[in-house]
Amino acid sequence: MKYLLAILLCAGTAQAQYRYNLYTVSGTNASVSATNATTYNAAADVGPSSRADIQFVYKLTTNNAANLNQNVTATFDSSCDGNYYTNQFSISLAANSNNIVWMRTNVWVTNSAWLRLVSVTNGNAVAVTNMVIKVGNKIGL
Image (tube, rainbow, N blue to C red; front, side, top):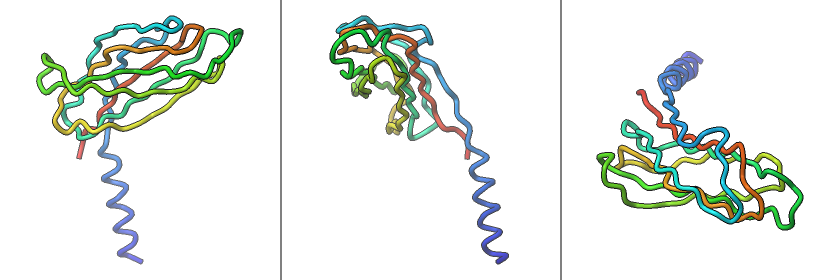
């Protein structure tokens, strides 16, 4: 019993040492026009961690159009020094009419100190609104 209690206490202590630095790389009122791309080039420092946490939230401006379930795609790239960016990757999230949709995922950033949101592409017939994209890094331990 003492052994189990010691494990639980140690696990609770280690968990409390994690903190997140969150960087909002696109604003709350950001919008992306229908079937269009918007360029951002906003960077976040993710250096002290091996994985970055990406949060992606948006909704469409209306439900008065057909086929409002297409992907909205955020494209990122990474950098070791904050000047030269390579290794582009994308995450996509399908719309659900004009309901709020969201996702949260982790990406490996072992060899990168910076992640940059390059652009967001909207495949739907209406604009995206209330879009928030955050990049977080886990620090501590």
